[in-house]
Image (cartoon, rainbow, N blue to C red; front, side, top):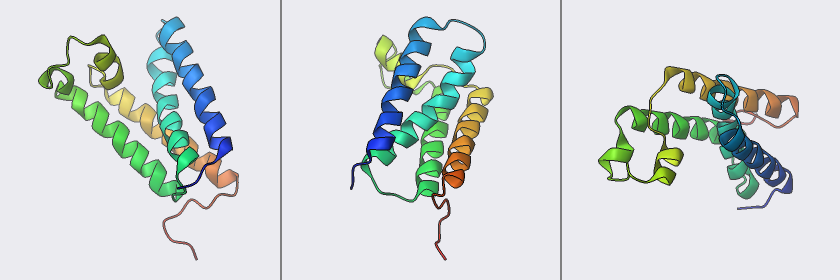
Length: 128
């Protein structure tokens, strides 16, 4: 475990952007698409703020988590757990499955991998 201030700053900025989108954007582009793209970047940065983990493993783990969350929406997990009446649970877990969301998560993680590669951070499972 280690602390990385740069990732923490990125996490805070992304969190504030997500809050802004959630509270003030009620359109057909930014809220449904950009929000989903940014949320996986937010999760990635949050994890990287506190743990020194290979960036590709973190990116793939984040993508898997996002996919699992989306699949839980397909099966209406929030209702199965009895949390359907909680607005907070419905916002955090989501309520409707979308293939477009899966695509946006993939795009967000792809952007992470591209940025990390361009910044010179090794993005591979095995180092030579």
